[in-house]
Image (cartoon, rainbow, N blue to C red; front, side, top):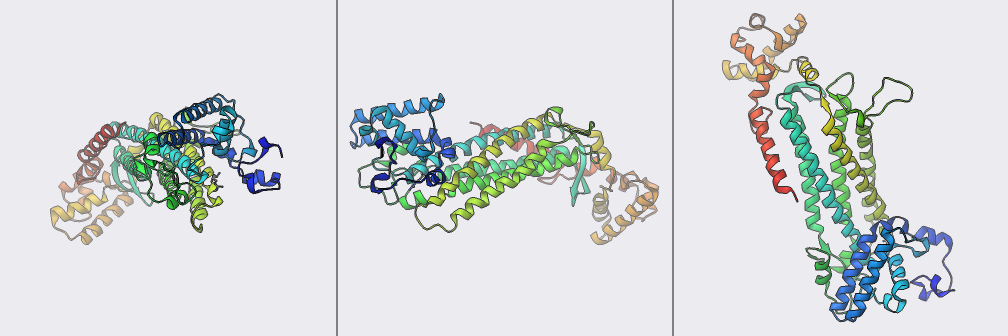
Amino acid sequence: MQESLKKMWSGRFSGESSELLEEFNASIDFDKNLYREDIAGSKAHAKMLGACGILKPEEAATIVAGLDAVLAQIEEGKFEFKTADEDIHMAVEKRLSELIGSELGGRLHTARSRNDQVALDFRLYVLRQDEQIARQIREFIATLTSLAGAHLDTLMPGYTHLQHAQPVSLAYHLLAYAFMFKRDFERFISSHERNNLCPLGSAALAGTPHPIRRELVAQELNFAGITQNAMDSVSDRDFALEILFNISVLMTHASRLCEELILWSSQEFGFVTISDAYSTGSSIMPQKKNPDVAELIRGKTGRVNGNLIALLTTMKGLPLAYNKDMQEDKEGVFDSVRTATSSLAILNAMMKEAKFNEQNMLAATKKGHLSATDLADYLVRKKNVPFRTAHFITGKAVAHAESLGVDLSELNAAQLKSVDENLDENAVKFLNLHASKEARTSAGGTANASVRKQIKQLESWLAKSGD
Ligand code: ARG
């Protein structure tokens, strides 16, 4: 066999690989996505080998310059990724050897293995994405918080079981999402902190006899420290599972918001108009305007959940340490990251341009007797009526309103009084829907005083959490 066509690991082989094997075994098609991390890791490794006297300083410098040249070739589109190179690690090393000679290029892999190399590359990638997604979530929280500021007095029905329940402000409803996304942000940040440790130097599984200094590589790559057990470092993928889980929860929150945008933009609700820029038409029905973006985000939540379950399942039966099964870890993560980043970008843009139809929201609050709880509370607090009795009397008032074909909030003093003598003229003001919202001043409630505090909290968090 021609020397240049040989596999790097072919020393103990006498026969050639089958084409089927080559195709099936290769990961270059997708792990080429890790070229930046792979080259950064190799440069840090070469510098460390130089600093520890394992390579001569000028050898390390030549390798680093060679790796920079490989990087430039990839970024300029001058690098052909070949299936025969198997994966990004071997492709980069092979090109390095072509550029600086195989005598020196072949020294780069001293004191490391592809097992710790891939663990490093993938971890660097995941850490970068943790930060990127957290940044996008923060931007979206800023959008929701500023929308909330504009809608303190936009009254709408709050729901349980998708039935009108109690009046709330649109600000309050939007802030519920802002706090969900804040927890998502925190999950990405805490995953980042936990996993910010360098695995390189773990070698195949048991460490190396070469006098390496792992901390130097960690410092060069801006890690907070090094991992503590080589076998763990090359064999676990919990950092990848964490980003998949974090994305699943994030997308679940986004999906619920999108579900509401879909409902709210329907003729039945008419609460929101999604801008033309983020709507689509029908090929047959000329009048249609569809909320495809929101539907796609809701739909894509299924695939990110699939990616999470796939990797959990891949990992669950693996003996320590590295197994090739783990090559299956990457595509799902790349897919989930792409899905989350594109979904967040368009969701943020769409929300900024959405028009909330305040009149329709207000009209909806007048259906469903939203002030019934307020009336019962009035009987308890001002008339000392036991809550169960108050509940019963209020139920009768609701039935009376229905018999008159009006909402409970529209009953006048005489009509109320005819239901029960405890429902005196003071009771009328408790039927007012704005008053109902404003009465809920408890911490975390929907009254403006409480909502303003929530907005303040988010604003000061936004100011602190910026880069
Ligand atoms: N392409 C491999 C992966 O993604 C790199 C590690 C290969 N290690 C090995 N011992 N074959 O997992």
